[in-house]
Structure formats: C-alpha cells, structure tokens
Image (cartoon, rainbow, N blue to C red; front, top):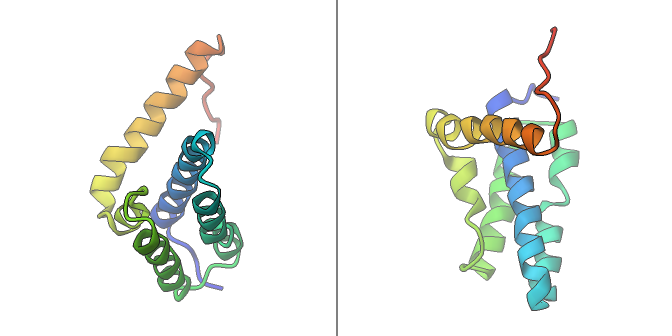
Length: 116
C-alpha cells in the first residue's frame, strides 16, 4: 500500500459528499438509472481509499470519466479530482470550515477545538 496524500483524501471525500447531494437531488425526479449509475460509480472509493495504491488514482479518474460521459449534465466530479491543490483548498476547505461553524451555531453547539 502507498501513503495517500491528505489533499487527495480530502478531494475524494468532497467528491463523495457531492455524490450524496446529487443523489438527493435526483431522487424527487425519479432518475433511478442515473442514481444507480452514480452509486455504482463511487461505491468503490472507500475501499480504494483504505487500501490506497498510486495506480488507484487512474481507476478513480476512469470511473468518474465514464459517469461524466454518460451524464454530461451531472456534476463534474473530475474537476474536483483534477483541481490544483491551492484552488481546492480555497474553494472547498475554507468553505467546509465555515460550514462547520455555521452548523454548530444552528445546532446550538459551541465549536469544539482539538487538543491534538
């Protein structure tokens, strides 16, 4: 097994989160085949992430490209995978940190700090 770069792990987690969002948006319209195909596309990601090898990135790119070719109107997951690290951090990580704070406020929870 190879060490998975943290930024790549974060990209794949964002891709999974976006997939759940797309699945939720597809459900009311009854787009069952597309929902099936999207779930089929990303179900391998957690297993690949747990036993990461450098060659897995090509496999991930391949399955995401296949989904994109079939559903051009769907979310462009490849753009997240291929985004340069600085842009990814600016777009997704800052957003995620802000969202976490907003969620804490909405839920009446005080933000927690790590003691690591």
